[in-house]
Structures are given as C-alpha cells and as structure tokens.
Image (tube, rainbow, N blue to C red; front, side):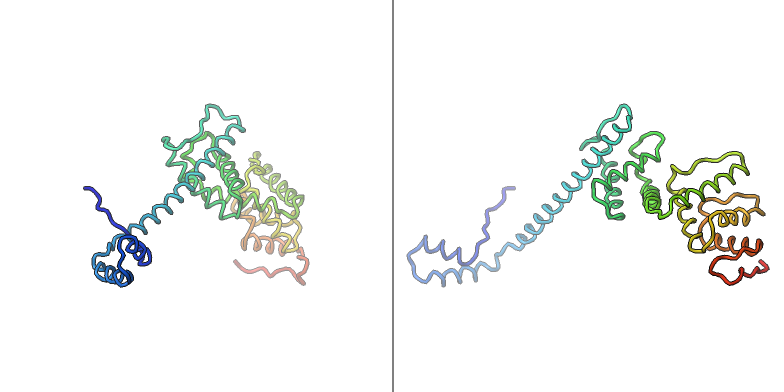
Length: 269
C-alpha cells in the first residue's frame, strides 16, 4: 500500500505559506482557523514513529559499539595466540559461525574490565591471558563458563603482586612444600597457580597480625591436623580455624605469643 503524504508544520511556518499563496490580509486568523479545524485530524502516530526512530538509532549505536568491542576482542585473541605460537589460528569475523559465542565472551570481558576498574585493552588482554592459561587446548567455547574462575585468578594475581613481604611469604611456602614432601614424597609446585599461591600471602599476613613467626605458624597448621592423617590444603592456612590451631600449638609447646601476657587457655574440645 502506497504511503499517503502528510506534513508536520508549525503555525508560524503555515502563516508564511499562506502569505505566499494569497493576498488576503490577517492570514494569522486563517492560520488559527486551519489549526482549529485540523486538530481532530492530527496524526497521533507521528510521535510514536519519532520515538521509535530514536530508539532504533540508539539501539543501532549500542549494536555498533558491541560489534566494535567484539571485533577488538577477536583481534586481541588472535594476536595473543600468535604470540604464544599457536598453529592454524584464524580471527573470528562478523557473521562467522563463532561470532555469537565471541559476543557472549565480550560481554563477560567487559564485566571483568569494569569489575577490576581496568582499561578496555588491558582488561581484555588479562581476561584472554588468564583464560588461555586454563586451557590445555584452545577452544573459544571454553571461555563461556570461565568468568568466575578468571576473576578469582586475577584477584589472586593482584594480591600476590601487592604482597608487602614476598621473601617471608616464599619462606612460608618453602616450609609447607618441605613438610608435604616429607609426608608424601611428592609436591606439585604452586608458584604458577595464583589462586593457590595467594593463600600463602594471606597466611603470612595472618601470622604477622598474630605476631607469630612463619615457621611456628606453619608448624601449628600441620600439628593441628596431624590427628586426621591429612595435610592442610592452602585454603586451610587462613581463617578462624588456622588461628585456633596456632593458639593450641603455642599453648601445648609453652610458646608465648608476642603481645599476649599468657598463652591461650586450652579447652576440653
């Protein structure tokens, strides 16, 4: 169906039109009458059309912005994999089979960037690097369920980077490693696993807050779990239970914690 012509005009412009079409004076009165008579015939859908057009333009801008972010992420993934000497790599393009997946990953990467207050480029790179470090073999789909894990790993990396006494943290880690080797004969190195190594940073800080030497702190953790025949997991080195093990060990060995007038009392539990 052919669209019927219509106009949308102001009263002042209508007066100008009438002045060109007629020699009648007081065209303002005629303009008033035209507006009065034409009011019932006003095209109410015009405002809706204008509103829809604005929404469409806004949506189009958002789509373009999303597309730019996704394309930028695709470029960084390609460059990072190339730097890591992956073979047979191709860059994901608009309209390709994996483009929808890439857009989902881009949304996660943007959330990650905002979560840690990073620039888009740095945040995207870190998201990619941490994600790739968790893959034995690259697959774009593997990024989708990784958001929480990537955030936890990056948070650990930040804490390790900000460690105020790395030497003491390393000493605590070596004590732990030695005890595990003595008990089992094997030990998986944790230096390259930030989400695990960060617990030694936290444990070192907890020992400092308790005014306890790291060797005593670590001995207390192994001693406290000796009855179970188990080895403390790095996560168990921090928290109220870890504090309790230190208190019990110091009481048993007659060690006074600096800042305390007497060793903690031993309960029946």
